Amino acid sequence: MTVVSHLGKTSALRTVLYLPAILALIILANTALRWSLADVYATQVSHHLDGEKKNTPEKNVKQWRQARQHLERTLELRPIYARYFELAESFYQRLDSLEFHRNPVIQELAWHNNALEALNYARRGLRLTPSWPNLWNRLVISKFLLKQFDSELTGAMGRAVNLGPWAWSVQYDVAMLGLSGWPNLEDAARLHVLQAMEQTWIMGEIKPSKRNAAKRMLSQAYFSQACEKQLKGTAKGQLDSYCH
Image (cartoon, rainbow, N blue to C red; front, side, top):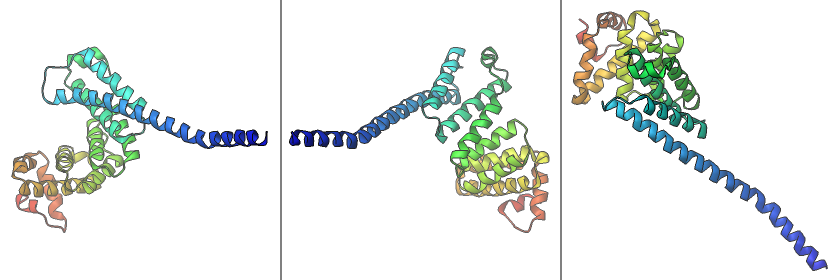
């Protein structure tokens, strides 16, 4: 009787010890499944946007609705993941572009405030990855589209430029956007634009394939005003010779 009682206690003890491990494995397996499904849905959204970039035939209303359902499902399955917030930002920024160009698809969808949606997703992503220059750049783009020339924009431009010194798209976007909106920018933001212009020019000299793109800065309407500010500064750069 004593032996039976001892075996019973041992079995119960093992059950108590194994139960947390079993529960942990179940939770991990469930999480892995949710993340895998999220990645599948996110891939579908990416394919949808890539098709737009490659100038394939216009996506119809049904395809756009399905893409947004996939995006929502992605965020539901993995709600705390910066890459998916970046994807959502790109999705809504693309919708805003369609709205701006009065595309009949977006008019039929009747989805509004897309630029604001894009901005909010960029903010959410940056709370998770504040050192991500590309996402700061996306925030800058959204702020320009909304014409929000405030301290948040200034800070975002500084973060983008300083965190991604050799990221071509980051430096080029800040330089070109900054020149286009030069009169509306805070003084600190203009300094970030000058920094991006200089770095864009340097990368254009290093990579011949980027040289023509870098030279587009010279034809921007407010290039001369930017030059005036550059020449007033103490630091000299490679663009100085084009500012005289």
